Length: 104
View 1 (cartoon, helix red, strand yellow):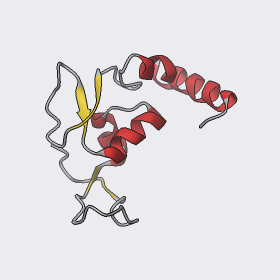
View 2 (cartoon, one colour):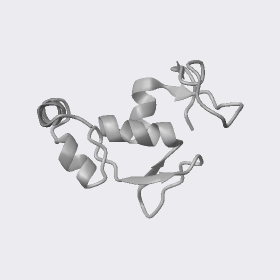
View 3 (tube, one colour):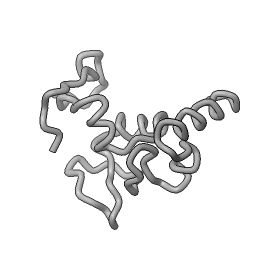
């Protein structure tokens, strides 16, 4: 959990960078960067759900809770993750981002 001071700093930074606050954006389920409506659902196909963009996996949904970025904006910042070959846990290698991959 973030301190109130940290939340205020993140909100101010988002307003300066994107013109919208992080808390307001996340409270309205939109991306702080591009304003796309997001669905707090995991769907690897990334098909719109009632006009909202879902997240590819649990890690991406968790990142939304940190940064407020939708799946497409996360892909633009971090690149695309290689899929796991197991379902146990993520290793450091699983979390490396491949910037040059096509995310779709």
